[in-house]
Length: 139
Length: 114
Image (cartoon, each protein chain N blue to C red):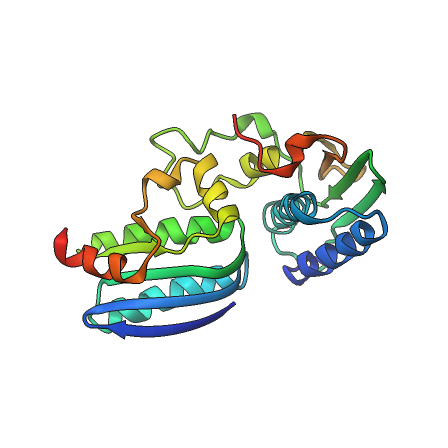
C-alpha cells in the first residue's frame, strides 16, 4: 500500500516498538518525525503515489543502544547528492526540498542505498544512549 | 488537524490543533488561507499552540501561504510556537522569515503598528 495513511500506520508501529523498548519523550518524537519524512518521500517521490506500489518499513530497537528504521520504496531511486541546501538564501522561501535535510537533523545516521528492486532504501539510526538526543541537534 | 477561524477586527486568526502533515493538515492550511483571501481579508494570524507535529510538507505549505498572502498585499504571522516547531523552523532558518508572537494581542496589534 502506498498512500499517506501508511505514514500513520508506520508511526503507530514505531510507537509500539518504542513502548516495548522504553523509548519515550524527545527521542521517540524526533525518531517519529524522521520516519514520517522518509515515508513521505518514499510514497510521493519514490512510488509517485502509485497505489499498486509498496513501501517496506523495518523498525528495530536495541533498548538503551539504538533505534534502527529502514524504509524502501519501489521507485526508480535517486541521488541525494543532487539535493540543495534549504538554508541557502535562494531556497529558504521554496515550498519544498526540506525533507531529507530534516531527516539528517532528526536522527544520528542516515544512509541511502538502492533497494533490491531498484528503488530507494534509507536507513535511519538514532542513538539511545546519548544526551544529545534530548533535543534536536543543531549544526 | 482541527481548525477554528476567528475574526478579530479585520484580522483573521486560525486556531490549529493536531498535525500539519502531508496529505492532511497541509492541504487544510492552504484551503483556510485561500478561503480567507477569497473573502477579501489578507491579515492572518496562525495560532500553533495546539499543533503537535509539522513535517516538511506542512512547513512548505506554511511558506507557500506566507508568500501567497504577501503577494496579495497582506501578511501571515505566527502565534504561540511550541518548542519543537520552533526548533524545526530554526534549523532551516525560517525562524527569521516569519513574524512570531507569544501573545495574540501583540500579534493582532502588530498589523496596525507595521
